Length: 277
Image 1 (cartoon, rainbow, N blue to C red):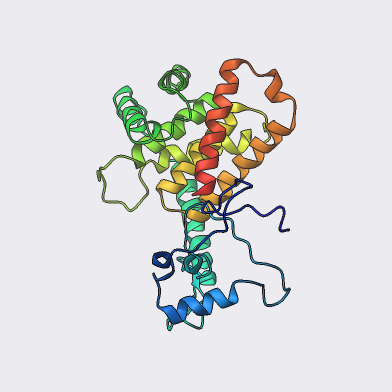
Image 2 (tube, rainbow, N blue to C red):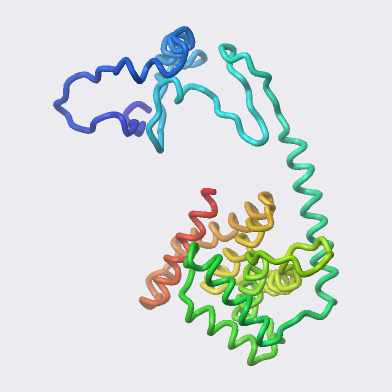
């Protein structure tokens, strides 16, 4: 375990270096009693006697590395910090599950209601999608976005295919990323487009090796993220991550053209970013 442990960025990788000397300024960020308590306990794990190793993605002092960090759901305060611990995990999941049920009911209701697919609305939402989403998460270029909307519009949004699904999600993200409040209802903006895109995506879910399906899955997760639905975002992006894993484990990536490989790389990158968040 020691040989496989990834060293901290503070540790040099040169073989012939002098022993690391701890700077006094880095050790004095906390109260000296607290720092001594941590430093004395950092050598071995109390239960197994295994040396403690840490994989830091950013620079930390030894005190910061051994101090539990609070999250939105739970925090177990160490004995040397006189702060009350909390654990809202069960309440968090209760709220998120209930919110998901409510969102599903709203989507079912929106399927049977008419929606505005006029050229003016589609162009406005497409522009919002490009400015507020695509420039930050370039999962594909603008030409792909325009082509998907044109194909869906040519078929009057009646086909249950990948371009229509992609177009619906583009419109949904364009609506939710706009800073508008045009109605008195409490529905999430763009939900009427999102509901139809999700319905088509459910039918495409077996097409694991399809790049369009993967792109739709990432856009669906992005909408959940915009709507502040972390549980649904996690479920959707986890499926996209599994699809990436299946594609990379097969020979599909070798049969892709250069443009298809670039499209997959973009989708893989976007999936990794959202999954990390």
